[in-house]
Image (cartoon, rainbow, N blue to C red):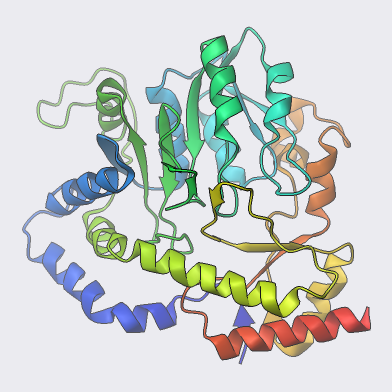
Length: 369
């Protein structure tokens, strides 16, 4: 049996009746676009985070893009973020006309090195965009202090951090707004694309609602600023409503998988994930590190274990962002990680016997290197 980093079938089979009931609910509702399911999900997702507003959109990339635009970010502005992230984080910045500016990540937890932000701020800096990577939060206190001192807005990228906390604060509730993805692999995933941006600011939320609807007011069709169709689909919204009720259970399952890895691989030379003190990790992915990463991944294929790398090419090294002018070695920690990190299978329905197979395979491969 082939083992991959993610699989949804066991979870779907367990939840099939509820998922199909969600489909039936939408089809019988008489409204397939921006109806009761989108409104209900937005209210419930906002309530889960203790904020006033949630605006559902069509994917996580647009959740970031529209969030930036609603916060006033646009051409000529700079947005400080990281290169050790999924490319859509940076694509979203670029699509607003703003320029991404990168700081490095920390060696021990792979999160944004907030000590580098101050030196990256210029007169054009408009926004700080921390990425809560792999399931845990960036250190938000110093980041927020810098933002306040320089008059910057903060948009949190929470695509990988549904339900994560830093102390008593939930991911996505420190900044001016936060963007989420509901891509199927996420901690809270739809059965297709989806996203949302949350905020405590009513004026930002109003701009978000216009931006996702061509720039129009949804009732009166008064177009202020031309935009695109970026609506969250009713069907995905209803499925997400059902799954949101199980989000804490999903997180508990992911933590159990992480604990089994920690126990089973503790005495190997893999560098296992480190949870920052005060953080509550949700383990969107279980990222480990080894200097002979490529050999490990290749040899695991003989055991029918096929793994991913998150991420093999830092964004600043990609051809599409060569114009930004980041030379090799400019982000040394990010570049070193790209050659050594990889992800083990991680999802809450991962059966213990299947995980044991992965652990044993990894141990055997490491013993032969």
